[in-house]
Image (cartoon, rainbow, N blue to C red; front, top):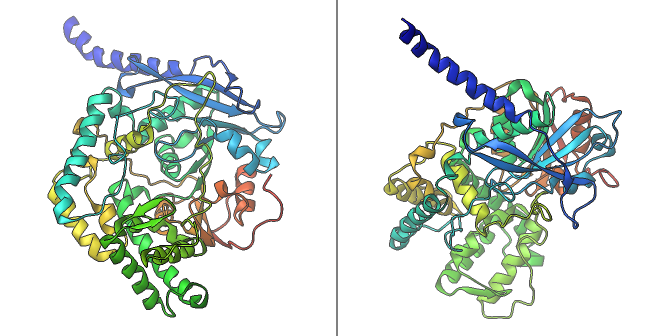
Length: 502
């Protein structure tokens, strides 16, 4: 009887020990220090210890690099605002200092701004797979004669990552990063956290609300991804969005034929573009120090969301393809949005970050978050052929085989189904190439208690991170009061508030 009783109590005892080990992370004492001489004095850094494997909380640990800018007013302080700059794989240690001037005084006085490098990123046990430049390219055009090479490349990426970082790789997932966020919350002594997430950071924030609903306070999601697309559907969503932006561009350019000479109708502009692609595939075009094939030009499809920027570049390419000096060094996107937090920590936080860190983390997250990647290379071949016909601009680039086809199944935790009625605020440009409007609408459906502000005519990836916007007042009201609009809103991109947002 004693033996039976001891056996029955063992699992409960083990569970209690695991819970106690996990709770211990929330009681750790943090030591704040300068982030480095080249960083603002207001930015402080620390290390937060977390379990490598949350199913073995008493086992191996890793350190997260965490930063903060303290609230401007102790009397008005509401709590902490954690931040993530997207990626996956983008470091966020400097994000509080970079976001501080973009936030109004009413927000800065209420929140400690908290940044962190997610696990595997930057100063937080950085991943590296020793990938070549070609292996770090995420999209490759499909062709029958090169598909075997594409398969070999995808397999090589998976093999290299598992050989180089197999001990860390299975644990670099969105769910574990959300768990890390909750450890940070506890270590900061906070009952709940508020959050600002950009791009992939919107998905991370949504996963946190699903896993820790009682600990989520005010969540702002800038340029949101549809959680149901995680992750293969994200690539396919880019192709669909590219066609919409391309169609809009042909109309825009046709209305300005006297300036650009691409055609007087959308059909003529479309034909001019595809003639350029065919010509560049025969003879690559030399422009601005680059030699571009037609496939390389197609790979810049995201630029079509900004017609005024991309059109001079297309004209210059056509001129160069005709054998005439281009006469311009125009690029497709002369001023792309740089996500806040894209820099790495320095000074006391100076771990050597592998050159392929972001690429390694992208595949760790995309492949490890979900089990829905096909394993059969022929499935990717069929999908690339189908999508190239359906979405000529980018379908094959996005559907072609990825390293996830060869990722070890041991790394895979089921994807998080996001469906809740917690309050959150989604802000979204109408013309975003990476988090398309359709994707943001998918996030809005998943977060039933949220509200969404659509910036009509807004171009590019990022609203709050890009500076003053017609959505600013709604974001400020929500962060300072916790009150959402009564309904989803649309504002005009031309209605930008005067002065800075600070």
